Length: 216
Image (cartoon, rainbow, N blue to C red; front, side):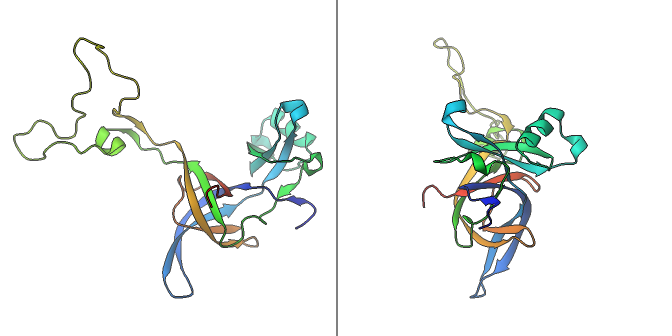
């Protein structure tokens, strides 16, 4: 590993879409293509100054004029020349101030590594209970007046109100979702992509967090 790179248990990428490949036995494997983007340590958080230890990672490079002046100053303080617009924290057992400004490496995410992938799910808008909560619904034939509605949800006298967290129609999607124990099929740093077996949350061009699997 290069001296200018640091290995951490997570890295951020950009979902490019899905495709399929064929393994050695000829079976087709559905994979998600993740675009590899630069991840740079923009701040080192310590117990003395912040009360905990972690690395702040900057990613998603933009044109310089599209990044605010405070963020430019923050990146300049860390010795980062590129204009990044998104930031996230990755906890680490021990932190080292010398890693400030260094780029994250892909050493921990070689082929056959198991990972957990976190992303923001696709927005579905306002949906009813059948699509949102998988309710069964009522009979679909003629003569019935109950098809796709919620049914009875309240009470009469006591308590006379709808309880919180009741499964009702409402906004669906745009939630933080994590899919665990996915396999890294291939990592190609030269062409800048990673293949992960199966599907991951989010739409095309959405950002995903790829972390070492916790339950493997």
